[in-house]
Length: 161
Picture 1: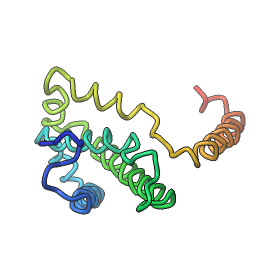
Picture 2: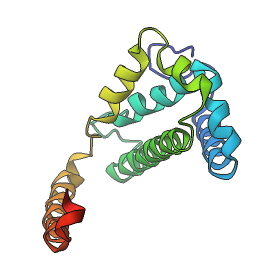
Picture 3: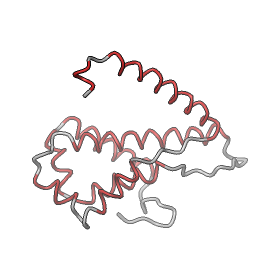
Picture 4: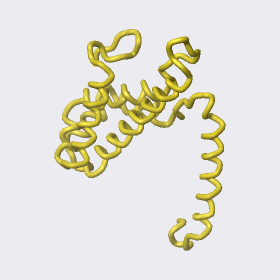
């Protein structure tokens, strides 16, 4: 995948990138054979890794200019996070039901598993959230952890193991 210094795909607009990602996402959801075809070429995994790396961090400037307002910047970040979520979901769907795919191991072992290692390190990072919403997100996460911890207490002992 050819990129320039701004970490964008050269010659391809953002709308085309998102449209291609959504088409891929819908195809792998609808057609199980597409899940296996993804693993025939390392470039598809590289493209998904590119989107994850790009949108995991904030790609807009942190200072507001006269032409863009804070609301506009927050909307752009929301769109970026939606693309990130779609990318992660697409990758997850491609991993499901392809355990016996003969091409999958070849793609994953490309460059001595370097791509898998980079992919895992990117996925395990926490996406950046704009400062006005950081406190709200942290509170939601704390509330979720508290609520979900009660579920574990109510499970039968055989399911907890």
